[in-house]
Image 1: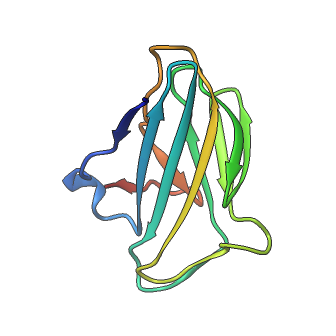
Image 2: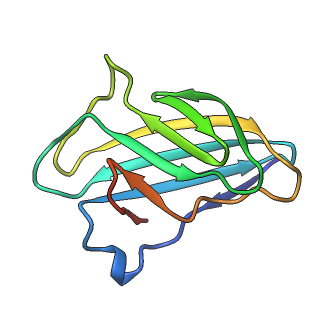
Length: 123
């Protein structure tokens, strides 16, 4: 059985952003699954999204679902597929997941998420 880790509550400094991200990690030592929810906390919809984060602990994303994913070194970029999940309604969410390989004992959660180039709160 893997270890499940989730992000805690956003800090007061983070609550002014127009989005919030929740991430979870299932750690199996040499592999992992990640689950991410992006919440649009603004009053206008987001048409097209991209989320950039640094993958900690030597994680290598090998597959992603409900998003298109790329990885360059530790930087992971997830974006909406062209024909699915492209719009995040005002107050709405989108979810995606990933799986990959990692170095045992080093899995962790990303410290910062940058959706569409802006800082985002975590929850």
